[in-house]
Structures are given as structure tokens and as C-alpha cells.
Image (cartoon, rainbow, N blue to C red; front, top):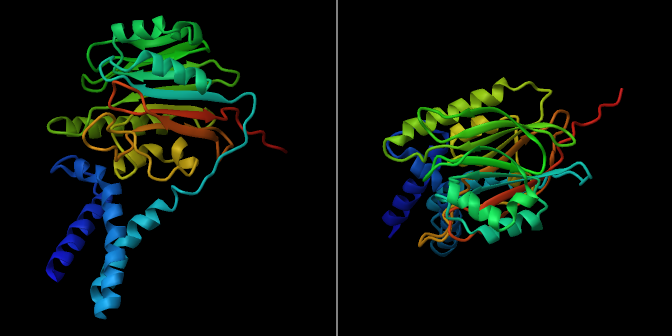
Length: 320
């Protein structure tokens, strides 16, 4: 029994250590995706080890388990601290939803747009039929401005807004999905990069890593005076170095609200949701906390939860 405990401890330690490994092979990204699960195992292991240590008065395993459990607890500390800002009339609400080949329920999506007062909606895997269904459900009246492209089944990405939009580019990486870059002409303009990368499985893993690197390079190239929003399905979580490189200097909207273990995938699956693949990242000049509120909502007929964020996109006033 003690040998089994050491084996579980070793496997948990190995799984947690992949957080710092930046390779797109040997199924490392898949193991990284299970980081929250490994963290839960580590905490449970700590509890069992402490009880066993008290009962048997053998402390070596308890000490080792405590060290392993301290890792996910320390890393989650930044997640559970809320760092939001007060609402204002100039805030903008951005929402993202992966439609799963256009199949997401139109009534649910339009209802979420209405409930959260969404100003700009980013859709991935949006098909012509899927967009038509949304418009029949009333989306065209709510968000009349739109840029991007529909495509079947997975490549289509659209941005729909109540603000005028200017398309800056409709990029694809190595034949990948459309990822439009736009200027959103709100009361305070901002640049929006819609994101949809490949999933890091099989032969797509190296392309996925290249796409994350391209997103990082794009973010680094944006002037510090520009308000920047990146919203979409990154197919990556904060347990993956490639995503953390993108998120440097940016604020993850859900992390800012102290949401803890956020899970946006999979939805409507035999496997319960366990990872956040969908993010709204924001950077506003002069603001350390540009997020007012953020959350996730279940959408029928798709495998991703929708993510929304109320953002203070007005640059901070710097007093002289």
C-alpha cells in the first residue's frame, strides 16, 4: 500500500512538472491540460498523507505529499484573488463562443447577448447556416456590424458588434482557421484579435505551438498606447507556457474576477469539463485592472462554454 502511495505521488509530481515544459510532442500538451485535475489529486493526497502520518507516525510520505500539494496551491493563489475595477458608462462587453461547426443553439446565444448587454461577439466555427440561424433569432438587430468569414465546418470566425468595425486582417496560420483582427469603433476604440487555434493533438500539435507563438509575436508588436483585446478559443490554458507567453502584459478576464478553477471544455460530454480553453484577454494603457466582471455560460449543442467579459476599455487618465 505504501508503494502505491509513492507511485501516485511520483505520477502526480510528473504531471504537475509539465507546466514548465514547452514542447508540442510526446503528448505533453494533453498532460498539461490535466493540470487542474493533478492539482486536485495532489490536495487529496496531502489530506490522506497527513491522516496516515498521524495514525502510523511515519512522516516521510506526508512531508513529500505536502511539498507536491503546495505547488498547485501556490499557483492557484493568483487565480482566486479578485482584481476588478468599478463599472462605468463607457464599458464594453465582449463575448466569445465556439459554435461547434455552426451547431450552437441560436436562442441561447441571442439570450446571452441580451442578458449580458454584449456589445461585441466573437464566434468560432461559425457556418453560413449557423449565422443565418442566429439572425433569425434576432442577432442581426442587436449586433448589425460584422466582419470575418463563415466556413464549414471549423474554419469560420466572425466578429459581430453594435459598433462599426474596420477589418485590419483576416489571418490564417499555415492553412489554419480564420482569426480576424479589427478595430472596434466604440466610444473608446480598441483593437480586437479573434482567436481560434488548432487543438494540440496528433500532427496538429506543432502547428498549434506555431500559432501560439504567432499570437505572442502579434501581441508584442502592438503599441503600448493601444487598447488590445484577444478573445477566442486558444485551445490552451494557463498550464501551458505558450499561452502564458501570450498573456504576459495582458489580463485574463476570468482570472481577474478571482473565479478559481474555470472550466470551459468539454460541454455536453461524458467527460465533465476540466479545462479553460476559451479566454478574453485585455490590455488597456494605464490600467492595471481593466476588468469589471466576467463569467461563463453553458450553450446547448456545442462543446465549449461561452465566455463574456465587461471591460473598462477607456485608457486611464494620468494626472500631471
